[in-house]
Length: 365
Image 1 (spheres, rainbow, N blue to C red):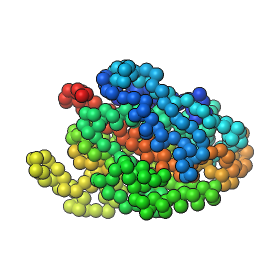
Image 2 (tube, rainbow, N blue to C red):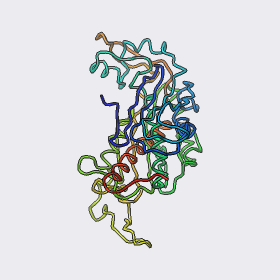
Image 3 (cartoon, rainbow, N blue to C red):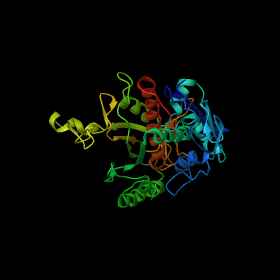
Image 4 (cartoon, rainbow, N blue to C red):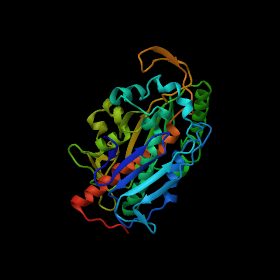
């Protein structure tokens, strides 16, 4: 019921925020790929709560356990199950939210759809669900890097109205991870941290934009007409919690240009390869990757659960007010970076395997 994503490289996530644990089942991973819990843990540590003064103080190690599909350090070609247990749940913080709907959260809509919901920590609507996506994304990134040298780097581009200048063609993961807000521009990063700390003190929250670049993506990925690569990426990104917008390449800014200004003119490089002079297409044309860097942006709204008192209603239909308790991110952007990378990796890995199945053969070294 909407918990599975992908075609050949398919994932199903499971678990609730304050349940016994969360995780993912990966189906379709090729055999003999070397993968370890330690490799997966790197990205989970980037996503986990309590990692800095500008994230939720919930303390979870988010230690992953591979419970199937890997033997002697290599994938078997069978389903891979990865589990992360919940350790630091404080369900009592949500007692009031059991019957008071949080403005702009999924409480009211889950009740409208199912007539029942796990109100502890947001249940399935919590961003804790993304642990499974990030774990699966680490496997997808390993496949893409092993067979094609694909590199995926996401970073915080904007917090509220403060936008950083970043060269997407050269930015490195080391630059991204050099500060707690995951903005590779040091000056902008300091200003962003100040903004988030101020919002935290005011019991409020902030949104912003994560930008992501995928380099060395092979030509030919994407399945027209309905499975165009940018359409698949848009669905993947917009399935993340708190997302409200998606752009690729020039995005909405391209609407202000003429065709002659916007078109990416072709040339032949020193190896005789067809390249583009500019990359306003964002690495995808006609729904198919063209070999240039894929550049996209994801817009995240301010965190819905805040400590400021707001008007709301109860599940019994009474008007009331709510000042939410609990441990919540004043800004989701720093922890959303590995989530965006994961979703991009899942799409590219799935389409790489689909392209190989239809047009080529695949051997993982």
